[in-house]
Length: 389
Length: 214
Image (cartoon, rainbow over all chains, first blue to last red; front, side, top):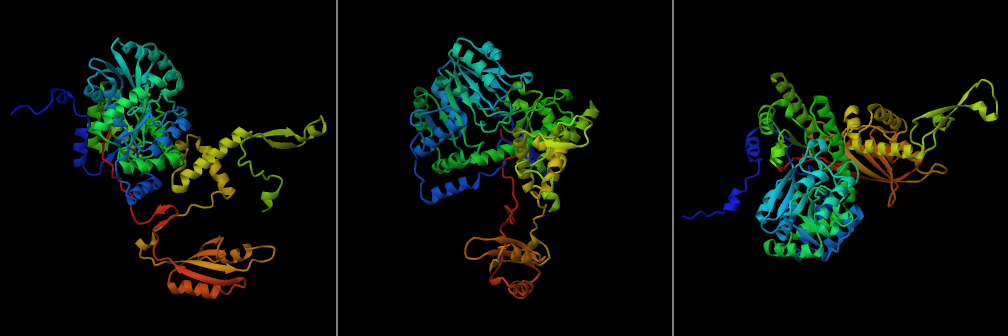
């Protein structure tokens, strides 16, 4: 029989957490800080609108680009929250989660040989999406001393004549890093000078704890070279609804929409009707959740300090990224041992790129009680391994 | 009462005393000798006041759902000093902004029998005191859980807790209906509590997320 598989696909590695999932699933009394989604239920008024749309029988396709009503609300929301305006009709499409938007953007913009700059540690889908779109991923290793922000110098150093796209994954999963206005302004200069495009994944935009999130699309000269990606999963605790959106200049968006039309057709209708309610009346829910996350973030940082675990202070998303280089183990070993010995699940930093070595991703999308219990276990693990040093 | 309305009372819009500045009060009259007394002036500016109000709101939001959180953890989560939180909590207790820290119990899961009733009460308001005096007469009974003044078809909503149906019935017929200003009562027994104080009673919350996701 012939090999049924595409070589290019087979060459793409599986994501690095399978092993953990398999071990953890077998164990009892495991406490996890390894989840990349909110712990809140979707607010009831949003779920209610989803149910209502089902009751009314609104179960047909929507237009390819998404429900007009929803797009209008999103345009208002982006204006209100992030001071950037998009034409809902020509410059916006509703996608199946932010993930689809990343895929569509890469496919619409890349030709073979085009290089995509991907700062790491970052979410796992950028590299495979670039490869699937025939692009060449080029990783920029972010540094802890810069709080895992991307600097203009690092960007400049990675640019070649083939560079076309810069992926900007901020606020960042897994590090919790953010980019402030001054950081983005420094990047914008380089981006414009080298005529690059930006795919800005801002799915955690609502979860920042220092200042309001700044989107790079709002900086002068950047809107026309940015694909802005956002969605409902993190802000409104709607991960399972699979709903995101992309905003981009018409010339890019219409090509993305073409692929979306053939590959996806349209985002789920029920989710879209629920999302209208979310974006129209959900600001208070978001504010409440943000406040809660912020408290937990402070709690975690305090506990790390108490147990002598080094960690830069993250100001975004719901992750911390402590450094475990002092313990003479790789991230993978450390996480595996902590799971086996203390039954705490965390994700090794290496799952998000080789430069995540020496770090762990610890999520605070958990109740305070769960965090306490997990951190107590972590503390006793640290005490134990310090004695072995 | 005396303490609240006296010289030391604070204007309502100033929720907390942070710093005082001591000013010799006789300088006000142009007297130049040794001061023999001080006027304490509050030097909270508007920004500080807003800051304290915001912190109070945050404290209240946190403890409303979880009053058992320790002082230390609460201070960490709010990113402020423990002493400040303690001070604000004490002040808010003093000002009766925080009125208590009750525990929500589902008595149905215990062997203790309880009967709860909602009683709609129509009353004649009293000259000069409106509904206050009759409300007070009613809320002084220990079996009364809550008394609300209500707009609509009746005046007071009284919630009641008794051991048995008969006990509740007896209270209504002997104590409540016989009050001079009570015109009529309508007793509704609670059959089951689904949700109380913003918390769902029956079902435990389960985390259905996967153990690991990226």
